[in-house]
Image (cartoon, rainbow, N blue to C red; front, side, top):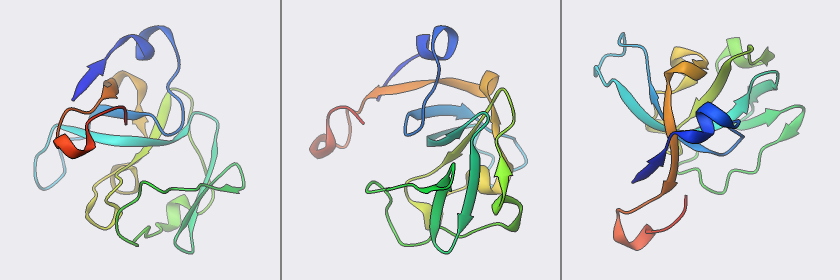
Length: 127
């Protein structure tokens, strides 16, 4: 994976960007960094319900999601992402620890944006 850190500092992260984030250490597997997809940015209205994700009242088409589980959490059935945060979710939804579990991530906890995937070789290229 190749990551750049300029967008975070001088630009804006946008929906569907793949980022490396430092997450809260209270997770049971003690991972400190994760690679996740930005689902919603500050000010976006988010709803996770009925197996789907809705941002600003539009269902998000997620061709990249593996598995069929987009479990909802009552807290995110009517939610606005706070200023200075992003809401991130894994593409392998039924096995992902993400913002549904630990909440939105402060921008300062984003290390960078993934710009090139090197491995696995059959998926080499831009994310």
